[in-house]
Image (cartoon, rainbow, N blue to C red; front, side):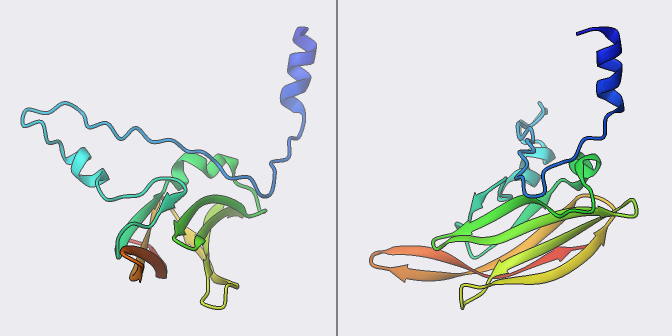
Amino acid sequence: MSVGQAANMFNEDFEFPENRILSVQADTRAPPSVSGNGDFARQGMGRPGLNSDIQDTEGTLLIPIGAIVDLLSEHPLEVDELRDHLGSALRIYARRVRDRAEVALLQRGSDERWQHLGWNRVQSDVDIHWFARAVLIGPSVRYELDSAQIRLD
């Protein structure tokens, strides 16, 4: 590739796909500490990662908006998903409107239809707090999403 071709490549307008699930990885290893139990490790416990399965009656899902804000456009982008025993239960979308990030939730309803819970402007990473109900299926306990909300602290 010549220098001129490389320069042209940077001047082209690239379009991002509208419905692509991102893989934003986080390093969950705890930094070394004297006690061996760093605060970082405790903060990460109980926080599901990307495409997580619900395995309790309550939890928090971190959405790293700061890591993906430069990838966002006005077209909504699915950035994460939360699954229960019935399958996809919550989808998290992000977009950028007038240089401000917005996050929205789509939750599967009891009628199996997706319910849009509205767009929220955010300035940093956000936590999605969710609640689930325990369901007994044979001898096993399964969890089904009940509700979710964006925490704007």
